Length: 347
Image 1: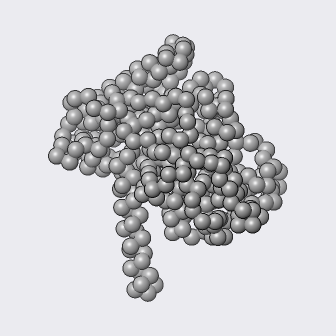
Image 2: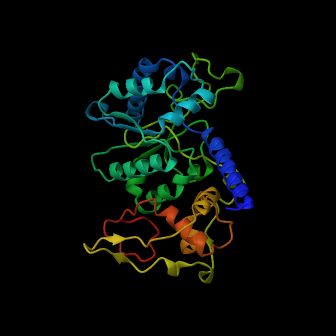
Image 3: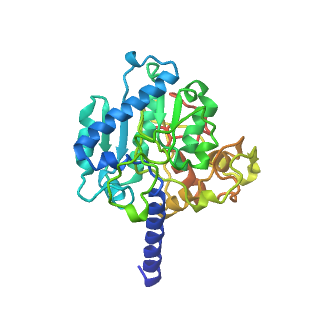
């Protein structure tokens, strides 16, 4: 590695670190008055969350006495603890691990899971949990806490267009920031829980101080099915500077879209569909993620309307494969998909 390559590598690391830290400013966190009580605070937070979920179910005419509330929250506990201390008002003497212990121990179906470092670990579990619970006929309602993260917009849009009966069962938990890409999806139900989650980063002069007063503005939460409370990406300058998120339809001339790369359908020896291997540059993966491109438009050439970006130029082979690889992290909802132009993930 020559000096120029080394310098560029360091610059890329710094840029990615700055972007990640900016995104973390919009994450969902429990209120500091819970966090600073350690295990006792976890117990209280679980009770408050349960009560607020019950209130929402009552508003929807769902019998709370005959309904189990399941909470699944995923986070890198080490990274989240640092964020809560630096910007969330949690004191340095408090222990997020103790808080989580109390939260998990309060109710049998409440689980705050430490997935370790890497945002994609939490993302994968959230998507798989959402798919599992929404396909379960006994699941009456899903409260989903990813409103700050544009990365979920393509995945959620599939529910809006292809699974309207499931779409109506989802409530989006909103915090002090809702990403425009999520907002433009038009969820029928949106909910804030200001007594459970923090209203935003603690003011600089009050960091590391316990918060004893109710937060002035609300934020989201884990939920009765997949819930997230953690390390998901939020918006960056790349998606704040585009005004076409609600306009449509959008098209790209067929000759400029590399749809021939999608097919044909491949299957393994057992007859299950498998995805075509893709070799992409990890540095390009990070760059494409920051663009928040609409997969339908740039992979298939047409999008009726969605909350993602449509004003970027047509993609070359490397960028096309990279966007396709990112899109395949969202699983296909069809059990036996034979669509050669399907851009979702299979086995």
